[in-house]
Length: 171
Image (tube, rainbow, N blue to C red; front, side, top):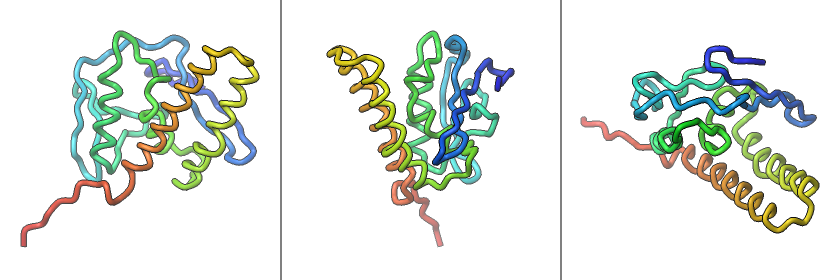
């Protein structure tokens, strides 16, 4: 499946437990097309804006989250990109895109359980099969695994209702 407007390809993976999963990929990393990132507060949530253009998911859904800290973190990931957009280093953005698009209509708990108990350990096992017992490869895969796990934990934490900014009402 190709998303023609932005040059992204979507890798479709079928799993027995979760059906179809979508992973955005690119033939080559796209060039950074924006200069400024910001966060807007809107109806029902927060949006990330790239040069006055609202961010959309790979499926074209408007990016809207209820957590201001999460929106700021995603905007920071986009802002940290240099000449090219390296989606493989944007773990929170990828998690948000998957949660928003949610092609299999999974619950939040199912998504988190899959990340913590399914995807990450399987990825670790596959990397061991590929690289074998090469020390530097284990260090790299350990760092990648830790960053993905940290992003998943941060994603869950920032989506907890007690972490939302609460507005005081004047009576």
